[in-house]
Each structure stands twice: as structure tokens, then as C-alpha cells.
Image (cartoon, rainbow, N blue to C red; front, side, top):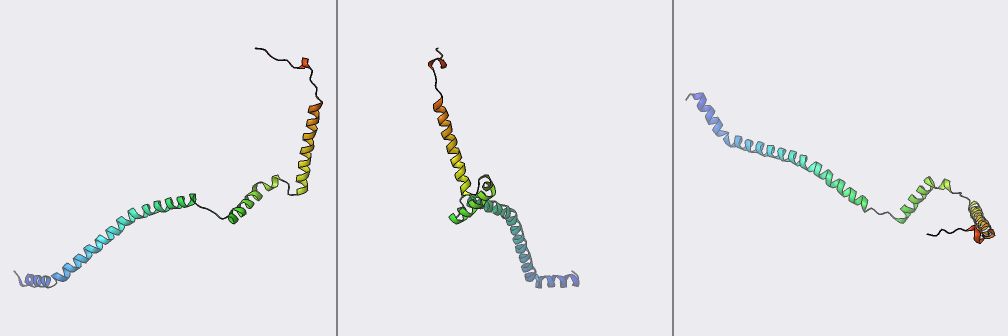
Length: 125
């Protein structure tokens, strides 16, 4: 063996513990990176799925206070139906009186009609 090879071998032997320690650290870091990568590939979609499922369940079981409901109902009513009904109480009373008088008039007309026995024909089977 040449002197250069011997010196190289002695140097490697002297630094062998340090070299082995660095290899172990590199191996541990590589394993950690791979584990984090796999965890991210599996964990992120799984976490999103679980989060969305819990969010849906919470939405199904959501409750609101009566004050929130009242304000929501008032807004819905005002937005969709308020224009269909008159806002004036006097107009509503007039409408009710008009329908009541129409019903009375129809009852009077019904009483005025008289039927004779000859007007009704019965079918015999």
C-alpha cells in the first residue's frame, strides 16, 4: 500500500464516528420528510372531508333565537309579500266588508230561486 492510501485510511478511520453520525442524521431527516409528505397527502384530503361533514351536520342542527327569526321573517315578508297586501288597516276592513256584503247578496239570490217539481229530472237506472 502506498503512503497516500495509508494516510487516507487513517483519516477515514479517525472521522468514521463523525461520518456515521452524519449518515444517521441524514437518514432520520429523510424519513421525517417522507413521513410528512405522506401525512400531508393523506391528512389534508381526509381533514377537509371530516371538516365538511361536521359543517353539514352543524348546519342541519343549527338553531336560531326567536329575535333572529323574527327579524328574518320580517325581512322575508317585506321583500316578498308586503306589496300584495295593503298596508292600511282601513283598506283591509273595507275589503272584508265588501266580501261580507257580496256573500249576503249571493245568499239572498239563492233564497229567491224557487224550483217546481217538473224542473228536476231524476235518472233511473
